[in-house]
View 1: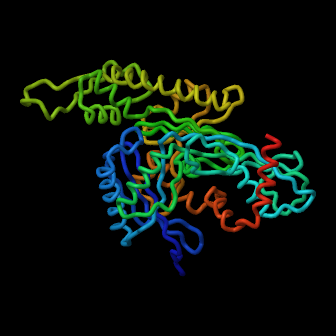
View 2 (view 1 turned 90 degrees about the vertical axis):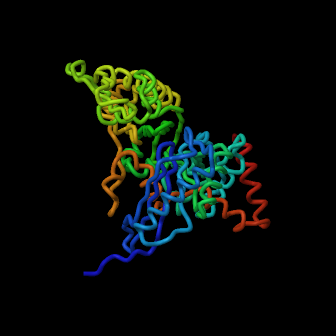
View 3 (view 1 turned 90 degrees about the horizontal axis):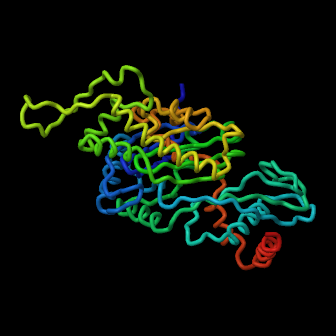
Length: 419
């Protein structure tokens, strides 16, 4: 029996507020993805998704990558980098060109998107992704691929995903300091959507809520693409800090309480369940251990969750994802592992809520199959997807050059005249 041969090596790194994790995968001649190695280290030099100490973060990145390299028995020099914070924002902009009844060619689409990019005011932000939505031919929308069709007018809404330039540069500098070349910097909500949402969900409309350690990203997918994004500066660490502050505990103790005993749902037994807190700083074994009831713990958790869910609801309303129109919510990220959180959010939001986990990839360790690693797996899937991206549009600068300047100017003028 012939075994599949690995033809392409793909590596990705997700630099978060609680952990830095890496995957090295291979794509076989049959298109299958196989995980060859993975690595994980506790984050250092990162706060709220922003790099605050390049030296500490670079060392963490280096250690996580080296662990994955040892397991994969190979060295990498290029890596896809996920960006989960840094002023992520999105916008939809319409653009159109006249074709005079001619057949739509690929270069027509390229020029259309180039015109949209050239006329888009980024307000000082860096564009990470520019993706077309469904095209329209002579006002008839819902066309996924217009190549080969005839039309007088070709139009499309281009979705831009942006970030503040400084966090992007800091992320790139940190990765380069670890002797790696960033082959792409990808907004994690885009990658996460590829990993834990079905094609039908993305097409019909779904909200994706990625609850990380310090940042929660709320994104909306409709028509197969990401069309809206909001970032909330709150996550699982805020719940941990509230537990630590209320009960006078260290963060490590509070985190352990939350993970092993905490829940978003209450039961009549919670007042009787006494939780003893192990404390290495106790002077003697005779000294009483700190105690809290499970009801007290869960009350703190739900109090912070209510604040977060309120922000999530406001973000969904702002993006037009209102309850009256239905629509499922998928939650993922490390904090989605909290017991009962899906049921609690479903009741609070009045929507169907499920927990999103990474798509199955051969060789993926069991420890990486939970919602905390959805974005990491998504980065690998992004690398092999057929996403039409801005980096492809940039190639037009060299392909068309000065000889096409009048044509591009005509497209730009058409854009200005109509919008």
